[in-house]
Figure 1 (cartoon, rainbow, N blue to C red):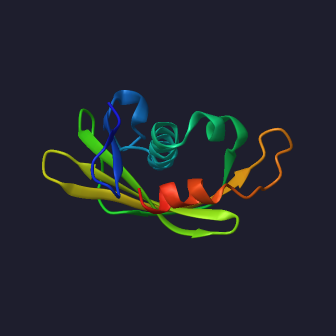
Figure 2 (spheres, rainbow, N blue to C red):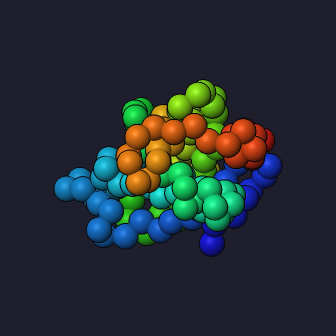
Length: 137
């Protein structure tokens, strides 16, 4: 179940299953990115007011990811995120993926997200109150 783990961080838990693995038996690189997107989306849905969820969409401008260790079948993982720098039309979001059993950092990602108008697909500014909500969350 998603939860606010502290005022600044949000996390979900996932278990590695066979569909997540590559030919080497490790979590596939693309899966780490999917989890980074999943935790960002879950954070948005938990924190943003319903009216903002309906009027603001998000697109990724950039992903950066560093892999530190392999995730393996049946690993229980913590996928943690928080918002970093907020600029006019971009929100920086950080993600860490940690194996719960030994607290080993498996991957760290930085993503730049752009808020958009979901009807036009064009970038849009978000309300100052929403920016403050994520800046302090």
